[in-house]
Image (tube, rainbow, N blue to C red; front, side):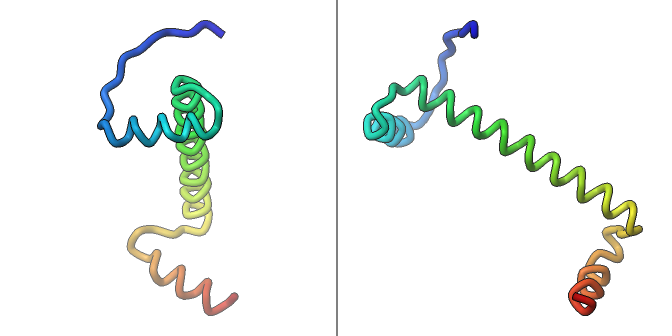
Length: 79
């Protein structure tokens, strides 16, 4: 995989914590930041998928912001 070098600015405390963690895990900062970024991107994709599923279900069940609380209450009663 082709790599590019970037410059980022982060607070000193965050960098210190990252360096400490990288040292504990026997890896360098670049590896740590790559993994953190991959994890962040995956979590955003997962959240987007959940949100999309929620929208589909709401449309299917005809749930709107106006009747959401009632739908939740009805679901809990029937559970």
